[in-house]
Image (cartoon, rainbow, N blue to C red; front, side, top):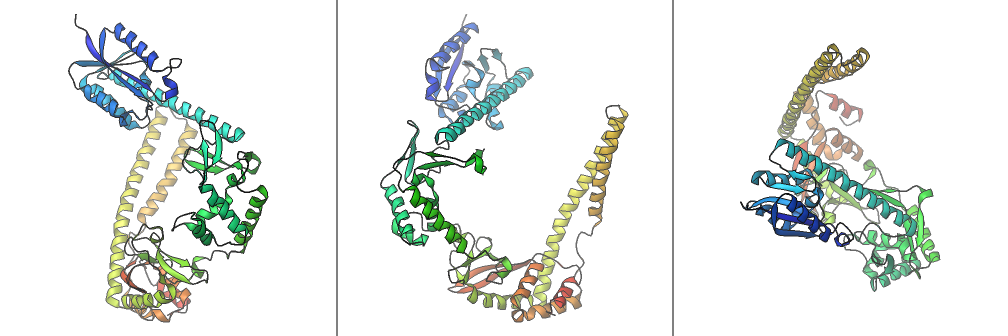
Length: 507
Protein backbone atom coordinates (compact mmCIF):
# COMPACT_ATOMS: atom_id res chain seq x y z
CA UNK A 1 0.00 0.00 0.00
CA UNK A 2 1.38 3.36 -1.04
CA UNK A 3 1.80 5.73 1.87
CA UNK A 4 0.59 9.37 1.75
CA UNK A 5 3.28 12.04 1.59
CA UNK A 6 3.73 14.82 4.14
CA UNK A 7 5.92 17.79 5.02
CA UNK A 8 7.36 18.05 8.54
CA UNK A 9 7.75 21.52 10.07
CA UNK A 10 10.29 22.18 12.84
CA UNK A 11 10.48 25.58 14.50
CA UNK A 12 12.33 27.17 17.42
CA UNK A 13 12.17 30.84 18.39
CA UNK A 14 15.78 31.20 19.53
CA UNK A 15 19.14 29.46 19.39
CA UNK A 16 18.83 28.57 23.09
CA UNK A 17 15.77 26.41 22.28
CA UNK A 18 17.56 24.46 19.57
CA UNK A 19 19.70 22.37 21.92
CA UNK A 20 19.01 18.70 22.57
CA UNK A 21 18.20 19.38 26.24
CA UNK A 22 15.30 21.64 25.27
CA UNK A 23 12.28 21.20 23.00
CA UNK A 24 14.73 21.82 20.15
CA UNK A 25 15.05 20.66 16.58
CA UNK A 26 16.36 17.11 17.32
CA UNK A 27 13.52 16.40 19.74
CA UNK A 28 10.95 17.83 17.32
CA UNK A 29 12.37 15.72 14.49
CA UNK A 30 11.98 12.54 16.57
CA UNK A 31 8.42 13.51 17.56
CA UNK A 32 7.46 14.17 13.92
CA UNK A 33 8.79 10.76 12.90
CA UNK A 34 6.65 9.06 15.56
CA UNK A 35 3.55 11.01 14.48
CA UNK A 36 4.14 10.13 10.80
CA UNK A 37 4.52 6.45 11.62
CA UNK A 38 1.33 6.46 13.70
CA UNK A 39 -0.68 8.01 10.81
CA UNK A 40 1.03 5.92 8.10
CA UNK A 41 2.41 8.90 6.16
CA UNK A 42 5.86 9.37 4.63
CA UNK A 43 7.78 12.58 5.36
CA UNK A 44 9.25 13.66 2.04
CA UNK A 45 10.44 17.13 3.06
CA UNK A 46 11.70 18.76 6.24
CA UNK A 47 11.29 22.53 6.81
CA UNK A 48 13.38 23.94 9.68
CA UNK A 49 12.71 27.45 11.03
CA UNK A 50 15.53 28.29 13.42
CA UNK A 51 15.17 31.57 15.32
CA UNK A 52 11.67 32.36 13.98
CA UNK A 53 8.98 33.49 16.43
CA UNK A 54 5.57 31.87 16.18
CA UNK A 55 3.96 35.23 15.45
CA UNK A 56 6.35 35.95 12.55
CA UNK A 57 6.12 32.77 10.49
CA UNK A 58 4.13 34.42 7.70
CA UNK A 59 7.03 36.80 7.09
CA UNK A 60 9.52 33.94 6.63
CA UNK A 61 10.27 32.86 3.06
CA UNK A 62 10.65 29.20 4.02
CA UNK A 63 7.21 29.12 5.61
CA UNK A 64 5.69 30.87 2.58
CA UNK A 65 7.25 28.21 0.36
CA UNK A 66 5.72 25.51 2.59
CA UNK A 67 2.24 26.98 2.12
CA UNK A 68 2.79 27.07 -1.65
CA UNK A 69 3.90 23.42 -1.60
CA UNK A 70 0.49 22.50 -0.22
CA UNK A 71 -0.90 23.21 -3.69
CA UNK A 72 0.91 20.10 -4.92
CA UNK A 73 -1.44 17.07 -5.21
CA UNK A 74 1.22 14.76 -3.80
CA UNK A 75 1.29 16.54 -0.40
CA UNK A 76 -1.62 15.51 1.78
CA UNK A 77 -0.48 16.41 5.31
CA UNK A 78 1.80 18.59 7.43
CA UNK A 79 3.40 17.10 10.56
CA UNK A 80 4.36 19.21 13.59
CA UNK A 81 5.66 18.18 17.01
CA UNK A 82 3.15 20.53 18.67
CA UNK A 83 0.35 22.74 17.43
CA UNK A 84 2.16 25.94 18.46
CA UNK A 85 5.16 24.92 16.31
CA UNK A 86 3.03 25.82 13.28
CA UNK A 87 2.28 29.36 14.52
CA UNK A 88 1.20 31.41 17.51
CA UNK A 89 -1.45 34.00 16.86
CA UNK A 90 -0.13 37.55 17.17
CA UNK A 91 -2.81 39.12 14.97
CA UNK A 92 -6.13 37.70 13.86
CA UNK A 93 -4.81 37.91 10.29
CA UNK A 94 -2.53 34.98 11.20
CA UNK A 95 -5.54 32.69 10.83
CA UNK A 96 -5.08 33.09 7.07
CA UNK A 97 -2.75 30.10 7.47
CA UNK A 98 -5.84 27.94 7.92
CA UNK A 99 -7.10 29.04 4.48
CA UNK A 100 -4.10 27.37 2.82
CA UNK A 101 -4.93 24.10 4.63
CA UNK A 102 -8.68 24.27 3.99
CA UNK A 103 -8.41 25.20 0.29
CA UNK A 104 -5.98 22.34 -0.43
CA UNK A 105 -7.68 19.87 1.97
CA UNK A 106 -4.34 19.31 3.70
CA UNK A 107 -4.43 17.54 7.07
CA UNK A 108 -2.47 18.78 10.08
CA UNK A 109 -0.95 15.95 12.14
CA UNK A 110 -0.05 16.71 15.75
CA UNK A 111 0.56 14.60 18.89
CA UNK A 112 -3.11 15.17 19.78
CA UNK A 113 -4.24 13.62 16.52
CA UNK A 114 -5.34 14.68 13.05
CA UNK A 115 -6.88 18.11 12.48
CA UNK A 116 -9.10 18.40 9.39
CA UNK A 117 -9.69 22.10 8.82
CA UNK A 118 -12.26 21.48 6.08
CA UNK A 119 -14.77 20.26 8.69
CA UNK A 120 -16.74 22.43 11.12
CA UNK A 121 -15.34 20.68 14.18
CA UNK A 122 -11.78 20.84 12.84
CA UNK A 123 -12.06 24.56 12.08
CA UNK A 124 -13.41 25.27 15.56
CA UNK A 125 -10.72 23.15 17.19
CA UNK A 126 -8.03 24.92 15.14
CA UNK A 127 -9.19 28.35 16.33
CA UNK A 128 -9.35 27.18 19.95
CA UNK A 129 -5.81 25.80 19.77
CA UNK A 130 -4.64 29.00 18.09
CA UNK A 131 -6.10 31.08 20.93
CA UNK A 132 -4.52 28.81 23.52
CA UNK A 133 -1.16 29.32 21.81
CA UNK A 134 -1.69 33.08 21.81
CA UNK A 135 -2.53 33.03 25.54
CA UNK A 136 0.56 30.97 26.30
CA UNK A 137 2.72 33.40 24.30
CA UNK A 138 1.32 36.38 26.25
CA UNK A 139 2.14 34.63 29.52
CA UNK A 140 5.68 33.93 28.29
CA UNK A 141 6.11 37.59 27.34
CA UNK A 142 4.75 38.72 30.72
CA UNK A 143 7.11 36.40 32.61
CA UNK A 144 10.06 37.50 30.48
CA UNK A 145 9.29 41.20 30.97
CA UNK A 146 8.82 40.67 34.71
CA UNK A 147 12.22 39.00 34.89
CA UNK A 148 13.84 41.82 32.94
CA UNK A 149 12.25 44.44 35.17
CA UNK A 150 13.46 42.58 38.25
CA UNK A 151 17.05 42.38 36.93
CA UNK A 152 16.88 46.04 35.95
CA UNK A 153 15.62 47.04 39.38
CA UNK A 154 17.90 44.82 41.46
CA UNK A 155 21.14 44.78 39.43
CA UNK A 156 20.99 47.74 37.01
CA UNK A 157 20.72 45.49 33.93
CA UNK A 158 19.26 47.30 30.92
CA UNK A 159 16.04 45.67 29.72
CA UNK A 160 14.91 48.06 26.95
CA UNK A 161 17.21 46.86 24.18
CA UNK A 162 19.55 48.98 22.04
CA UNK A 163 16.82 51.41 20.93
CA UNK A 164 17.06 54.71 22.81
CA UNK A 165 20.53 54.02 24.20
CA UNK A 166 22.19 57.25 25.43
CA UNK A 167 25.07 58.42 23.27
CA UNK A 168 28.59 57.55 24.34
CA UNK A 169 27.62 54.41 26.30
CA UNK A 170 26.60 50.87 25.48
CA UNK A 171 25.40 47.79 27.32
CA UNK A 172 26.96 44.40 26.54
CA UNK A 173 24.10 41.90 26.88
CA UNK A 174 26.45 38.91 26.84
CA UNK A 175 28.41 40.10 29.89
CA UNK A 176 25.61 42.33 31.25
CA UNK A 177 28.05 45.18 31.80
CA UNK A 178 27.97 48.87 30.90
CA UNK A 179 30.90 50.57 29.16
CA UNK A 180 31.70 53.89 27.51
CA UNK A 181 32.10 54.20 23.74
CA UNK A 182 35.11 56.20 22.57
CA UNK A 183 35.68 58.76 21.08
CA UNK A 184 31.99 59.72 21.50
CA UNK A 185 32.48 59.74 25.27
CA UNK A 186 35.10 62.49 24.86
CA UNK A 187 32.43 64.76 23.38
CA UNK A 188 30.25 64.11 26.41
CA UNK A 189 33.09 65.02 28.76
CA UNK A 190 33.75 68.20 26.74
CA UNK A 191 30.07 69.23 26.97
CA UNK A 192 30.17 68.99 30.78
CA UNK A 193 33.45 70.93 30.91
CA UNK A 194 32.08 73.73 28.71
CA UNK A 195 28.91 74.04 30.78
CA UNK A 196 30.82 74.13 34.07
CA UNK A 197 33.20 76.74 32.67
CA UNK A 198 30.32 79.14 32.07
CA UNK A 199 29.13 78.32 28.54
CA UNK A 200 25.41 77.94 29.28
CA UNK A 201 24.25 78.46 25.69
CA UNK A 202 23.27 74.93 24.68
CA UNK A 203 23.41 75.72 20.97
CA UNK A 204 27.00 76.89 21.37
CA UNK A 205 27.89 73.68 23.23
CA UNK A 206 26.29 71.68 20.41
CA UNK A 207 28.30 73.60 17.80
CA UNK A 208 31.60 73.09 19.61
CA UNK A 209 31.11 69.42 20.50
CA UNK A 210 29.12 68.18 17.51
CA UNK A 211 26.39 66.77 19.77
CA UNK A 212 22.89 66.89 18.31
CA UNK A 213 21.49 67.73 14.89
CA UNK A 214 20.93 71.11 13.19
CA UNK A 215 17.21 70.90 13.96
CA UNK A 216 17.56 69.85 17.64
CA UNK A 217 20.88 71.09 19.01
CA UNK A 218 19.73 72.34 22.41
CA UNK A 219 17.52 69.40 23.37
CA UNK A 220 20.28 66.89 22.52
CA UNK A 221 22.80 68.71 24.74
CA UNK A 222 20.23 69.00 27.51
CA UNK A 223 19.60 65.24 27.45
CA UNK A 224 23.34 64.67 27.76
CA UNK A 225 23.71 67.03 30.73
CA UNK A 226 20.83 65.32 32.57
CA UNK A 227 21.95 61.70 31.95
CA UNK A 228 23.24 60.16 35.24
CA UNK A 229 25.04 57.38 33.34
CA UNK A 230 27.87 59.84 32.67
CA UNK A 231 28.35 60.02 36.44
CA UNK A 232 28.46 56.20 36.47
CA UNK A 233 24.90 55.77 37.83
CA UNK A 234 22.09 53.81 36.18
CA UNK A 235 18.85 55.23 37.56
CA UNK A 236 15.69 53.10 37.52
CA UNK A 237 12.97 55.74 37.72
CA UNK A 238 10.47 54.57 35.08
CA UNK A 239 8.44 51.49 34.27
CA UNK A 240 6.92 50.36 30.99
CA UNK A 241 3.42 49.16 30.19
CA UNK A 242 3.37 48.07 26.58
CA UNK A 243 5.19 50.84 24.71
CA UNK A 244 4.44 53.60 27.21
CA UNK A 245 6.65 54.56 30.11
CA UNK A 246 5.46 55.85 33.48
CA UNK A 247 7.45 57.58 36.21
CA UNK A 248 7.93 55.58 39.39
CA UNK A 249 7.06 57.08 42.78
CA UNK A 250 10.09 58.67 44.49
CA UNK A 251 10.27 55.93 47.12
CA UNK A 252 10.62 53.25 44.38
CA UNK A 253 13.42 54.96 42.42
CA UNK A 254 16.67 52.99 42.58
CA UNK A 255 20.22 53.81 41.52
CA UNK A 256 23.06 51.43 40.66
CA UNK A 257 26.71 52.37 40.20
CA UNK A 258 27.53 50.61 36.95
CA UNK A 259 30.49 52.57 35.50
CA UNK A 260 33.71 53.19 37.37
CA UNK A 261 35.48 55.50 36.85
CA UNK A 262 32.72 57.80 35.52
CA UNK A 263 33.14 60.44 32.83
CA UNK A 264 32.30 63.20 35.33
CA UNK A 265 32.52 63.06 39.09
CA UNK A 266 29.32 62.92 41.17
CA UNK A 267 30.13 66.40 42.50
CA UNK A 268 30.42 67.84 38.98
CA UNK A 269 27.21 66.14 37.89
CA UNK A 270 25.34 67.53 40.92
CA UNK A 271 26.67 71.03 40.17
CA UNK A 272 25.45 70.78 36.56
CA UNK A 273 21.97 69.79 37.76
CA UNK A 274 21.93 72.74 40.17
CA UNK A 275 22.90 75.18 37.40
CA UNK A 276 20.29 73.72 35.05
CA UNK A 277 17.61 74.21 37.72
CA UNK A 278 18.69 77.83 38.18
CA UNK A 279 18.55 78.46 34.43
CA UNK A 280 15.13 76.87 34.23
CA UNK A 281 13.91 79.09 37.05
CA UNK A 282 15.08 82.28 35.34
CA UNK A 283 13.22 81.51 32.09
CA UNK A 284 10.13 83.67 31.49
CA UNK A 285 6.83 81.85 31.92
CA UNK A 286 5.07 80.78 28.75
CA UNK A 287 2.67 83.49 27.74
CA UNK A 288 -1.00 82.66 27.13
CA UNK A 289 -2.13 82.81 23.47
CA UNK A 290 -3.83 86.19 23.85
CA UNK A 291 -0.59 87.76 25.07
CA UNK A 292 1.75 86.28 22.46
CA UNK A 293 3.01 88.36 19.55
CA UNK A 294 0.94 88.10 16.40
CA UNK A 295 -2.79 88.77 16.10
CA UNK A 296 -3.11 85.72 13.83
CA UNK A 297 -1.15 83.27 15.99
CA UNK A 298 -4.33 81.22 16.61
CA UNK A 299 -5.97 81.52 13.18
CA UNK A 300 -3.22 81.48 10.52
CA UNK A 301 -2.55 78.17 8.76
CA UNK A 302 0.04 77.11 6.22
CA UNK A 303 -1.40 77.08 2.69
CA UNK A 304 1.18 74.45 1.68
CA UNK A 305 0.31 71.69 4.20
CA UNK A 306 -2.65 73.05 6.20
CA UNK A 307 -0.82 72.98 9.54
CA UNK A 308 -1.23 75.76 12.07
CA UNK A 309 1.29 78.57 11.86
CA UNK A 310 3.26 79.05 15.06
CA UNK A 311 4.95 82.16 16.40
CA UNK A 312 8.66 81.59 17.05
CA UNK A 313 10.00 84.01 19.68
CA UNK A 314 13.68 84.96 19.69
CA UNK A 315 15.83 85.99 22.65
CA UNK A 316 14.77 89.65 22.27
CA UNK A 317 11.10 88.78 22.55
CA UNK A 318 10.31 89.42 18.87
CA UNK A 319 8.07 86.92 17.11
CA UNK A 320 7.95 85.45 13.62
CA UNK A 321 5.34 83.31 11.85
CA UNK A 322 6.46 79.86 10.72
CA UNK A 323 4.68 76.68 9.64
CA UNK A 324 4.37 74.33 12.60
CA UNK A 325 5.76 71.46 10.50
CA UNK A 326 8.35 73.50 8.65
CA UNK A 327 10.68 73.85 11.63
CA UNK A 328 11.04 70.05 11.77
CA UNK A 329 11.64 69.70 8.06
CA UNK A 330 8.27 68.09 7.31
CA UNK A 331 6.95 70.99 5.21
CA UNK A 332 8.65 72.89 2.41
CA UNK A 333 7.49 76.23 3.90
CA UNK A 334 10.35 76.57 6.41
CA UNK A 335 10.99 80.32 6.22
CA UNK A 336 9.95 82.78 8.92
CA UNK A 337 8.24 86.15 8.55
CA UNK A 338 8.43 88.74 11.30
CA UNK A 339 5.16 89.42 13.11
CA UNK A 340 5.78 93.16 12.90
CA UNK A 341 5.96 92.89 9.10
CA UNK A 342 3.29 90.23 8.56
CA UNK A 343 0.44 91.55 10.75
CA UNK A 344 -0.10 94.81 8.79
CA UNK A 345 -0.08 92.83 5.54
CA UNK A 346 -2.65 90.32 6.84
CA UNK A 347 -4.77 93.16 8.30
CA UNK A 348 -5.08 94.81 4.89
CA UNK A 349 -6.00 91.54 3.18
CA UNK A 350 -8.62 90.61 5.80
CA UNK A 351 -10.06 94.10 5.49
CA UNK A 352 -10.28 93.76 1.71
CA UNK A 353 -11.92 90.31 1.86
CA UNK A 354 -14.37 90.60 4.77
CA UNK A 355 -15.03 94.27 4.19
CA UNK A 356 -16.66 93.36 0.88
CA UNK A 357 -20.36 92.52 1.17
CA UNK A 358 -20.42 89.98 -1.68
CA UNK A 359 -17.30 88.16 -0.44
CA UNK A 360 -18.60 87.99 3.13
CA UNK A 361 -21.97 86.66 1.98
CA UNK A 362 -20.23 84.03 -0.18
CA UNK A 363 -18.09 82.86 2.75
CA UNK A 364 -21.13 82.70 5.04
CA UNK A 365 -23.06 80.69 2.46
CA UNK A 366 -20.17 78.21 2.20
CA UNK A 367 -20.05 77.91 5.99
CA UNK A 368 -23.83 77.42 6.09
CA UNK A 369 -23.64 74.59 3.54
CA UNK A 370 -20.86 72.93 5.51
CA UNK A 371 -22.91 73.21 8.70
CA UNK A 372 -25.92 71.73 6.89
CA UNK A 373 -23.84 68.72 5.76
CA UNK A 374 -22.58 68.14 9.30
CA UNK A 375 -26.11 68.53 10.68
CA UNK A 376 -27.44 66.01 8.16
CA UNK A 377 -24.87 63.43 9.22
CA UNK A 378 -25.57 64.13 12.91
CA UNK A 379 -29.32 63.80 12.31
CA UNK A 380 -28.88 60.37 10.72
CA UNK A 381 -26.70 59.25 13.63
CA UNK A 382 -29.27 60.49 16.16
CA UNK A 383 -32.11 58.78 14.30
CA UNK A 384 -30.17 55.52 14.25
CA UNK A 385 -29.43 55.81 17.97
CA UNK A 386 -33.10 56.48 18.78
CA UNK A 387 -34.08 53.33 16.87
CA UNK A 388 -31.45 51.28 18.73
CA UNK A 389 -32.74 52.51 22.10
CA UNK A 390 -36.35 51.68 21.17
CA UNK A 391 -35.35 48.14 20.15
CA UNK A 392 -33.35 47.69 23.35
CA UNK A 393 -36.34 48.80 25.41
CA UNK A 394 -38.57 46.22 23.70
CA UNK A 395 -36.02 43.44 24.26
CA UNK A 396 -35.84 44.28 27.98
CA UNK A 397 -39.64 44.06 28.28
CA UNK A 398 -39.61 40.71 26.44
CA UNK A 399 -36.91 39.44 28.83
CA UNK A 400 -38.98 40.50 31.85
CA UNK A 401 -42.10 38.77 30.49
CA UNK A 402 -40.05 35.63 29.85
CA UNK A 403 -38.93 35.64 33.51
CA UNK A 404 -35.22 36.15 32.84
CA UNK A 405 -35.13 39.70 34.25
CA UNK A 406 -36.30 40.90 37.66
CA UNK A 407 -38.64 43.89 37.95
CA UNK A 408 -36.15 46.20 39.82
CA UNK A 409 -33.49 45.56 37.20
CA UNK A 410 -36.03 46.18 34.42
CA UNK A 411 -37.08 49.50 35.95
CA UNK A 412 -33.45 50.56 36.37
CA UNK A 413 -32.51 49.80 32.74
CA UNK A 414 -35.74 51.25 31.31
CA UNK A 415 -35.05 54.47 33.25
CA UNK A 416 -31.56 54.75 31.78
CA UNK A 417 -32.83 54.12 28.25
CA UNK A 418 -35.67 56.65 28.61
CA UNK A 419 -33.26 59.31 29.88
CA UNK A 420 -30.97 58.80 26.89
CA UNK A 421 -33.93 58.74 24.49
CA UNK A 422 -35.12 62.08 25.85
CA UNK A 423 -31.69 63.60 25.27
CA UNK A 424 -31.53 62.17 21.73
CA UNK A 425 -35.02 63.44 20.88
CA UNK A 426 -34.16 66.88 22.21
CA UNK A 427 -31.07 66.96 20.02
CA UNK A 428 -33.12 65.82 17.03
CA UNK A 429 -35.58 68.65 17.65
CA UNK A 430 -32.86 71.33 17.61
CA UNK A 431 -32.64 73.41 14.42
CA UNK A 432 -30.25 71.82 11.96
CA UNK A 433 -28.89 75.03 10.47
CA UNK A 434 -28.92 78.60 11.77
CA UNK A 435 -31.09 81.25 10.21
CA UNK A 436 -29.34 83.47 7.68
CA UNK A 437 -27.91 86.73 8.93
CA UNK A 438 -30.34 89.59 8.23
CA UNK A 439 -29.17 91.95 5.51
CA UNK A 440 -29.14 94.97 7.81
CA UNK A 441 -27.00 93.13 10.35
CA UNK A 442 -24.71 91.87 7.60
CA UNK A 443 -24.23 95.41 6.32
CA UNK A 444 -23.25 96.60 9.81
CA UNK A 445 -20.77 93.73 10.17
CA UNK A 446 -19.22 94.56 6.80
CA UNK A 447 -18.66 98.11 8.06
CA UNK A 448 -16.77 96.74 11.06
CA UNK A 449 -14.52 94.54 8.91
CA UNK A 450 -13.98 97.43 6.50
CA UNK A 451 -12.27 99.26 9.40
CA UNK A 452 -10.38 96.13 10.52
CA UNK A 453 -6.95 97.73 10.65
CA UNK A 454 -8.23 100.40 13.06
CA UNK A 455 -9.30 97.87 15.72
CA UNK A 456 -7.15 97.02 18.70
CA UNK A 457 -5.25 93.72 18.67
CA UNK A 458 -7.42 92.20 21.44
CA UNK A 459 -10.57 93.13 19.51
CA UNK A 460 -9.31 91.53 16.31
CA UNK A 461 -8.33 88.36 18.22
CA UNK A 462 -11.81 88.19 19.79
CA UNK A 463 -13.58 88.48 16.44
CA UNK A 464 -11.30 85.97 14.75
CA UNK A 465 -11.99 83.52 17.57
CA UNK A 466 -15.77 84.15 17.59
CA UNK A 467 -16.13 83.63 13.84
CA UNK A 468 -13.57 80.79 13.87
CA UNK A 469 -11.83 82.41 10.93
CA UNK A 470 -8.91 80.53 9.37
CA UNK A 471 -6.41 82.28 7.13
CA UNK A 472 -4.42 80.03 4.80
CA UNK A 473 -1.28 82.03 4.08
CA UNK A 474 1.75 81.50 1.85
CA UNK A 475 5.03 83.31 1.42
CA UNK A 476 4.73 85.25 -1.85
CA UNK A 477 8.20 86.84 -1.53
CA UNK A 478 10.80 87.57 1.10
CA UNK A 479 8.99 89.21 4.01
CA UNK A 480 5.62 89.04 2.21
CA UNK A 481 2.70 86.83 3.32
CA UNK A 482 -0.32 86.41 1.07
CA UNK A 483 -3.75 85.08 2.09
CA UNK A 484 -4.29 82.19 -0.33
CA UNK A 485 -7.83 81.56 0.95
CA UNK A 486 -10.02 82.40 3.95
CA UNK A 487 -12.56 80.24 5.74
CA UNK A 488 -15.30 81.10 8.23
CA UNK A 489 -16.16 78.26 10.58
CA UNK A 490 -19.00 79.78 12.66
CA UNK A 491 -22.27 81.06 11.19
CA UNK A 492 -24.09 83.58 13.43
CA UNK A 493 -27.74 82.66 13.75
CA UNK A 494 -28.92 86.18 14.52
CA UNK A 495 -27.46 89.53 15.53
CA UNK A 496 -25.59 88.16 18.56
CA UNK A 497 -22.17 88.69 17.00
CA UNK A 498 -23.06 92.29 16.17
CA UNK A 499 -24.20 92.84 19.75
CA UNK A 500 -20.90 91.42 20.95
CA UNK A 501 -19.12 93.94 18.75
CA UNK A 502 -21.14 96.70 20.37
CA UNK A 503 -20.17 95.45 23.84
CA UNK A 504 -16.55 95.53 22.77
CA UNK A 505 -16.99 99.09 21.64
CA UNK A 506 -16.18 98.14 18.06
CA UNK A 507 -19.41 99.05 16.28
